[in-house]
Length: 466
Image (cartoon, rainbow, N blue to C red; front, side, top):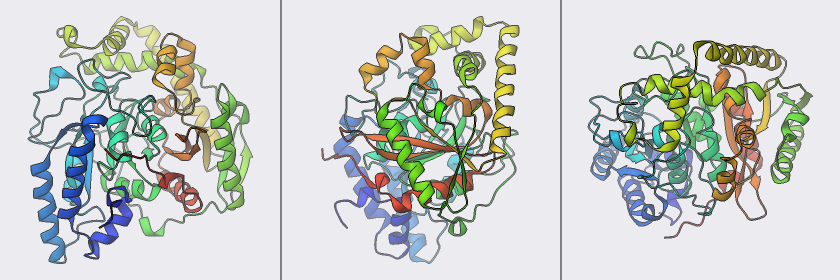
């Protein structure tokens, strides 16, 4: 076992486990020791479950020794954002008022991961209620690349723990960019699937029509493995889509004949030079790999990004009706403000928000009818610092720009794959994303694997030595 065992991709580790070269018990012990050593600084975990992890690792080892392999995830240690219900384990959703809530059953995605034989290391820190800011009484996860830089939004603990080698992958949720922002910040690959592709049963709700459950990992191949495990219809979630079967080994990992839509004006709107250069490098790789670039005109995203907070706020007010305003004193300022805004909005105002959303979604469908993929940055600023984000909070237009490449696809429900596309001069990760038509996660993963086959950005790791 090498010192870098904790930084393997899940796919690589799965091959070692199934060949008997590595033991699930040894792997789990290694990661638990690393969590104990580093997480006091990084704050990725809300709670670690060492006893459960070792019990599951021993069971996986016994099964594998008998020749029983449940899935490629069998024996692999992963972690969960702390809004997925876990039977017998507290689930607080980043909120002190829920710190003693212990679910009686697993969320559907958790049950599917258990059935696949994965090992649960623990629950990961997140922003309060999955909105923008961490509760003042809960530690903020620290970016393992540099503590002065943002670690992403609500799935920040998932991004930090996976990037720092404290788990091999994690599940997150994305309501306005909260899978994609942490992946960009931490040098990871993550998928916001089509809305309804993955069941939301047993997940703490922020905004039902905007919430998406998805995987966060170190490569597009790993994301695909996780997606194939958690996706599919769930009778407990009537909004979930019919089941899918993704043939993982059969997906072509090339850009050959893929049509990629490019709107140069949209891609440069308020986007910094480092991010623009990174996108141009990716487009050059697409061309050299046999893909074709098609000039498109992106539907106007101003209305849906300007409306996103109001759209989210109305639905958050419904989600929190049992505890807000009754327990408003226990809420942090950001989530309180969001819910108050939602409660104050009139039905007529909200209808206008919905009409703008439907208009954008229809126009986007038309654009995606002519191409296989769109390309975009994750955010207009490469590796923003905490100080930069504090200044954005005082400027509504700058805040709108921050989410202009993420939130529109939560509103429309289209799938997006975030992945590393380079580094700043200071050596911090830069992220981009591919966007596809609804239900076309396989083509996103194909494009991600094609990019990662000829680049090594996703293989870079932060220097977390303790």
